[in-house]
Length: 634
Image (spheres, rainbow, N blue to C red):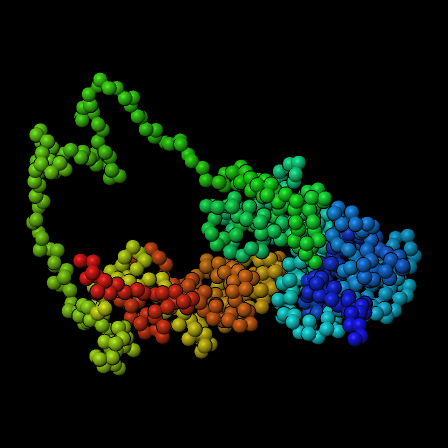
């Protein structure tokens, strides 16, 4: 039998390695920008076309490379960062220039122009699919310029798996901001299809965070600075008022390298416990500096996951640091023992008798003195100890005017539907109405409003044939609104209200990509939005008639959160999700007092819906306590 084990060609091996490192255009940008920073660049420009599918260009003013280094940089296992195995455990740089370039050149057409300051001429190299096309001297500025064209041109299956331009641009922006936040001393810019998205100048940490998230949020950030023998923690955390549903403004950095760490994220969230709602996420930008020998950055091919030698101790330090920061700025709740009117508690004296007349009378809010031991109609505490509370005597309340209790009932109009009977449509026979409890007529049945009672500002209670029905008022109205909104959108006549003064909402580049991808669906729902990339603001010119202008920011934020977490597919169920979100936002809230007429109207409209028993999200709208269950209780 012939041997079947053989070595892979370099081109195939490079493509396999590229599959781990280069997943999408954003991966290319991450590797190239980090390489530029490692080369000592103080100014890095990133230009993309068609979200990186057609072109990715990274220009820096770093140290550049010689002709030999430029050629070797595209070979596998070639790097300027490591000399022996011990260097793997004391890395101070971002990546391995040779490994990244070899993977990129295996799946794209790459052009490199580079020159050192001491050289008169630079070098130009063209590589496609790991094959060198040309290498020649050229005139070029000091630094390096990489042009990556037609990504995955030789792997059609991988190229077909790329998402839409807006989705890929969202990942590009995300990677760009991660590098930008980690290196505030480097000026960076990002341009997409000729439009500048970010122009970040050199500055300190505070200035870089402010430039990325906007002035409004940066003013609500609280500084953290803790130094221990194990770890130094610096950065900022947001006030509880800035907490949002989305988690886009949450960043961890270890030795100036972005990382994902759910364990440390839990330490921050634990510090905010009982301060923000469970579904809210605070903003934080936390930079950790530790001994490079105490962490391992080679856990993940993209080096976004880092393993710490003693992460439990760092967790406790981080948690205490955030708590201390919130407490220092009076964010944490505290017990206040200082009162405006201190209570005078007398000292106990066993030999002193208590005189009831010395007890001060209670003063209710009305200001009328009240003495619980004095009652009208000569109902005072008797000397014999017989009283109403002791049970030693009898007390008869006045029963005069009892007839007025029934005046409203006798004056009420005759009920069109008797109590306890089912409501059924004129289309149905009484026999079918017995089988189906609630089937209102198309034009509505004149149901008496006196049948309905509101319980705890949340439930509508009504007696029906099967027993007592409890209707969740918010969920019922949500179902009604959902079917009405869906019907209007299907007919393309959803009402929209133009705003005299547009609502302005601060939006990050990543979130802006999501909104731009939802523009058509939002327009169908009655919303007109326009993103200003230079100012990082979303201008909302028109909103659906179902919501108020003050609610529109929360509405868009909820959509962004659902898309980010994968609950909504922009190219699938987005329109239905918008209808559901609008219905939930516009539904009557809990705690709102409803008049009997409003409850009757809500009841009729609910059972005119196609699916009255469930909300659009599948929650139960009403429940019935059956007659048999009531009888069993007695």
